[in-house]
Image (cartoon, rainbow, N blue to C red; front, top):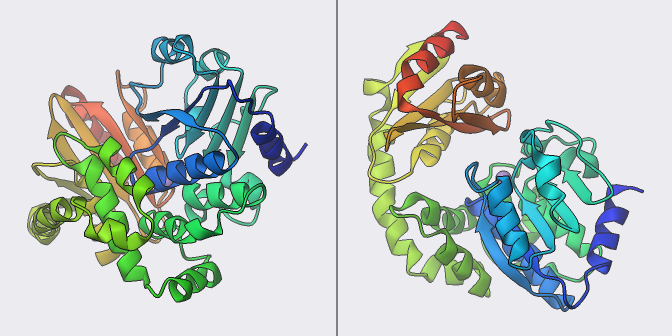
Length: 347
Ligand SMILES: [Mn+2]
């Protein structure tokens, strides 16, 4: 059976007593895709009971078993590369059925009787994951079973903020026209949603709620989160402007350590990649004994996911992954020297 058909039969098989949980990435793409899934299911008469942010720590047998024991029998994972986990089969076996909608690199095809595993390339063989974000995938998949056309602006926010909009000009132009808006304005809304994961402590649940309640993108622009976003913007600009002065490089590879008050390395690296498209830029931040890493190469000439995967390979408690132009990871602070050594070797 093809992926669209398996998706449709997953949706059709949901029964009134089923309890559904969504595990999602905490950025704008993860949040917008989650809201699209939940709203589409709501229209079909189903309620999503639990929303859980994906993290490497959250995705393990004990936590998933606890979720199952609380009653969750159907699991939906969005914008999260579950196929990266070696123990995955045992973990997902806890649930009656699992639906995975994701556009990260394909590590392993984990389709099975109980797992409906949908990657960007499976739906659109001519595209790659970095052209087709989870929000648009969810929008397209659910549009086949229920009319959610009023959520097109939300799909656009996910696409623009995840920088996966290049191949979708026609769709996006229709959205801009219909809602009398622009790429800039929807990007602004996406940046506000992203504030939820950046502030200290994070407020991802509130960001999710805000998007859930928004009737249009304007509600997001007017939300209380927009003030938080403004404050962060000054700090983000500060670190972007310090790049040339403080970053180190070997050939096209740049390493930039920053010490911000919030988790803004991924925005800083994205903005730097747009400013210096030819560079491969790795931005790092030490935090609580760990080092968070965000890597970008806007032109995709060097695969950032592979670069980080190699640089953290077999380090204890480390993880890395993502897309060709944009990847991320975490290591222990004590492994940072080794990480740098490996990075410069690959320059
Ligand atoms: Mn994404």
